[in-house]
Length: 462
Image 1: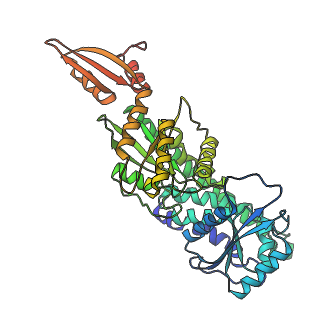
Image 2: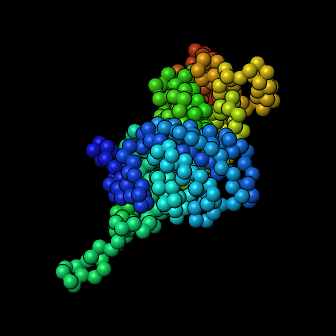
């Protein structure tokens, strides 16, 4: 994928669907620039028949407003709309639609953000009733990802998610979707409809992107194989968006990854070496932030990136412990990890990092410290001040050591290369030199053990 393609890849969607963006319904004014658009945000709180949630409707609305602010939309009004039931045609009831419509036209609103998942028909009908552009939660998150993606891979992944989402929206019956005439003169048949042409173009583009992403997956696998040959442990950092993941990553690795008080400030994964307290190195990986109701299109598109999590020796789950919805955010992250086949257990260690302890009151902090002490699998840190970071690295050393075995090996002084290799692959706990031999007590992980056994330098039984 060339730089020119990266620059213009996301423009494909707007070119292909220019009429979808501009001609939403009769009388709707075109939104030339979403940034700064006068916006209304609402969260529908379905009272009956909805699954119980750990979050309150007010908190869900605040998150939707934060997501909208990430696109620099001008939020004029936001509200929680209680619903007894969801209307199949318009999601909202007639009375609330009339009330919204009056407000929209009185305040020159250009955009409505619905913090829910709308079907294509519901989105179309709401736009006809309100006569403004309407986007749902999935569309909003996709737009944010489109703004944030920087690398070639990130741009391709976001475009794939966009196109998969738009493909399901090609159900509208505007004039630009009328049939095109096929053939020559009066002999032509009805030809291909514009909607079929759009769908065909989407399918072709999706196929091309998937081939390019397949190449990315192969490249990532080559990189993983290279890392396995020099078996540094991999620590993947995951967490709810805006939990302070990138700030902590910068603090631990002395990197300069973008870190702002903003939802989805960074998308593209970054990997850095970190010198651990035992003198060895570990590879830390910063991944995309998670969020509740993360669109399935995005999870599928970013699967190549998220595979770094499945390959990690330890997963650091970064939590904003000062956030009132921290438990709900934890559950959302664990649900996404579970969908990737990652669960806490013997094969995969999930270590929690409770970040932003500097924002806690003394009483709240004492409670958290007591809870962390009882858990034994939790570290308290402040990514801003660096407090607790050294203790975190010590705890990670201890966790990594749990999966290692200790060996006592003896070498002649002529075996200097083998001794040096053990210093590279493992952790030398003790060394004793005599006139003719060197004895080492060394701790090795399974990858290093397998490498040495394959080379015939270590017996499988130790």
